Amino acid sequence: MSTKHLSKKNILNLLVLLVVGLIIILSGNGNGISTSPSTSCNEIPKSEIKIASFNIQVFGKTKRAKEDVMKVLKKITKEFDVVLVQEIRDSKEETASYYLTKINEDFEYPKFNFIKSQRLGRTSSKEAYAYFYNTCQVEFLENSDYVYEDLNDIFEREPYIASFRAEDFDFTLAGIHIKPDDADSEIAHLADVVDSILNKNPNEKDIIVMGDFNADGSYFDEDTTSNTFKSFPYHWIITNDMDTMTKTGWTYDRIVIRDSTLNYEYIPNSAEVFYFDQEYGITDQDFVVKVSDHYPIYARFRTDLGDDD
Image 1 (cartoon, rainbow, N blue to C red):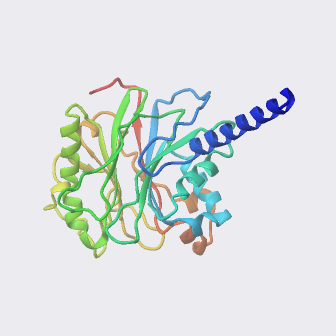
Image 2 (tube, rainbow, N blue to C red):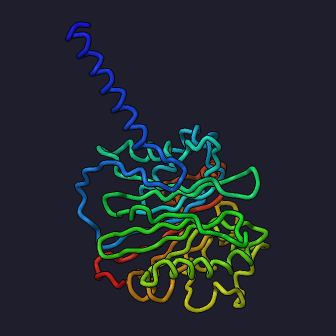
Image 3 (cartoon, rainbow, N blue to C red):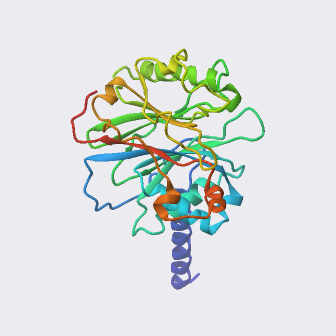
């Protein structure tokens, strides 16, 4: 074999390895492992970050094929520094990595990354959670993510837990999409989830529980004072007067923090609903519902106050 021929073969092998490596970087493996892309961020760290939760209704192959919908969805995620995405329904597990590609396509480098849980649920209709995060502002703490060990089978879709750091603010997120018919019980047992996080890390002061709680309407009495997770030290910063749904006036989606975060990193009164139709001038209500039946919710947190744990 000639030297010239051997050189071409080596070049071809190198190109194949580069392509495979790029595919690995841009795709999640479904086991909650960070994809860890290489970035060269030129952003100055901010003194605050926005943490959001968004139930993207039935997010799978059909929705991701709608270019106009994906254009809005990728724009939404770029508004925040960390976004918990719920209701990823995709048996081939391609949607999260596709979404990441769409989010990053407007940047010079892969600015966002994601981690993802396995598909969860008792029936054949399973869902995955994913955290999408701005790697220029937020660091995922490697190997910190896991699905809650639900020994008593309380949750239809067990919470997905992961820890992050943004400058001086390190925090643990517990994302949940609660089964509507079991809302009262599942919400109450979120206190057990927090306790389990504290058992693993007793020094963790900043635990943020968020997601679609189905915490309103016929599923849950939002004014109840008897539910364990609505008592001290928990604070529901997405309040009952906020409409988180695109078709109804319910407040299904919530963010819950404890005293230690409320009195330190949380920016008072910063928890809001992101009404993307108003923000982007979308007047077609039918199109709004195609994006999702939920609006994103979010809150702002200080990152420059010094580590408190």
